[in-house]
Length: 303
Image (tube, rainbow, N blue to C red):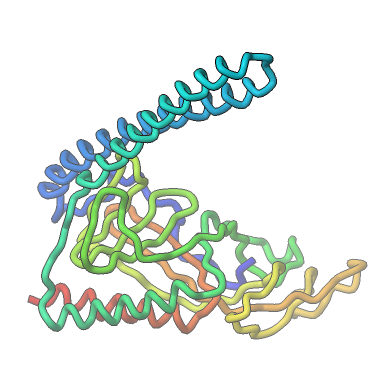
């Protein structure tokens, strides 16, 4: 539970509604390309699943033959035929998997020196952020009546563990690093060097201009009733049930002390409806990432 309030509606609009106006024309062309790539990949994936199901069925049949009183010569012939069929299936699986290689859109760009150095700094800050002990997606937040609940916290949130890494959207590749923020209740966010992509790996995605996306950090204090991450800072203590002045409410038997921990809240928003919030156990690395993002954004948008 958070001591302070959470400032935004935590549910983003569907990716199809998020595209920046600056990218409407480009997005339509890119969407047609990606739709085609995704459809082809889907057909290949279904074919591979079908082939592997056939292989498992043949293997199961082979195992059953061990218990059937066939003659040795008959069993040998059947096994040889089955093994040849399985070799053909494995060969076809390899051939189908090889067809995935060209089904990508490459968006390689050349950044001028000032932008490249800021991008390198952003990637370095992100590398530290990735290694925070805990990363949570804040999926829901509601106000708490502190008097009624006898609580020190003013907000109750639902959070889910997520991971950050350097990886691309399924069919969009880049030679430069792509910063990936997974999302527990919606589309993931991908920071490409010159645009931001929000997508769900199926057919829904949006392109966003850096000028239209804000990323802010804010210190928040959290009444932590789970294990405390090793890189988090404990800033105080409270009680499960408290009086208005913060002292323990003695009317409740078994009232227990709870640590108050400082986390960093990262919020990502856009005028088109992107609204995401992440909690980071290491406040320092989260603040550094937000600062590096702002510096990169300013340099990227400088003419």
